Image (cartoon, rainbow, N blue to C red; front, side, top):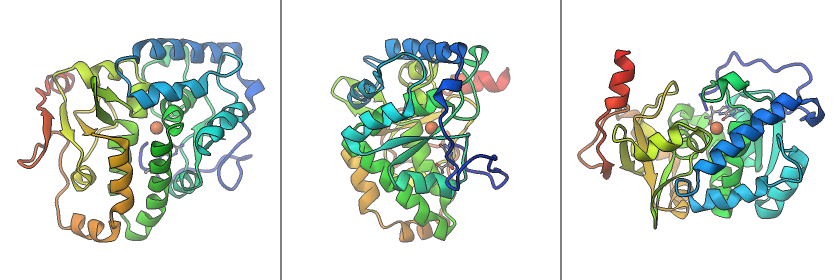
Length: 289
Ligand code: HBI
Ligand code: FE
């Protein structure tokens, strides 16, 4: 999510790779029921909004009991589909640790859940965001490969001091991505599918821009972490996303990016594939409030 800050300190009891035992039995009834509430609310809202691959992937979350998924059972099911597993971590982990997990097809999931009075907003990724938001897409073979490629690319980006550029690719695809599908625009980004408000806003509002995917353009684009996005990036297929990521030589791309300015969130370039030119009325109203 956010670019890892150097001040992250590994809690006692965490392993060298920052994993902790999930300790499923320690979750309270209340915590499980917050999961159930969030799960029901979102799974009702997503048909017709989420990408086909996401809706299909939700099946891996149909586990043998309600409540927060048991990671061992979840990993078994996910592993059968794509070889990915889910491991528990205390919260945000350092970039290198995060990339290392992804490169090895392990998804680190926060081992806590938001409180009932925080259903709609929280800063650190919790188990609902991480598991409901991310895991269904990891059951798709193409997306599963993309996430591994991202982890490998992340490790390499560290040699170029370019993490913050590559992090924008993650932000605008894995977290807040849209895709064109036969029925129209659909959401697949984990930050959107796990958000009750943004899963409607991102598709229905006339406020944000929606722009076709271009790797270099995305890596120049700033993003905001404190409210709904002002620009969404739209891909045509997951194959395109995977192939672009795998076939791009990032070293010259990073050098080229050094010579180009970053783009503020609302910029529209003449060469952009503009799907929707937003009014930005939502952001303006928020800024005035
Ligand atoms: N740690 N647990 C966790 N989850 C993330 O999404 C995450 C992280 N550490 C770093 C990070 N994301 C980002 O900095 C990278 O995607 C760039
Ligand atoms: Fe996330």
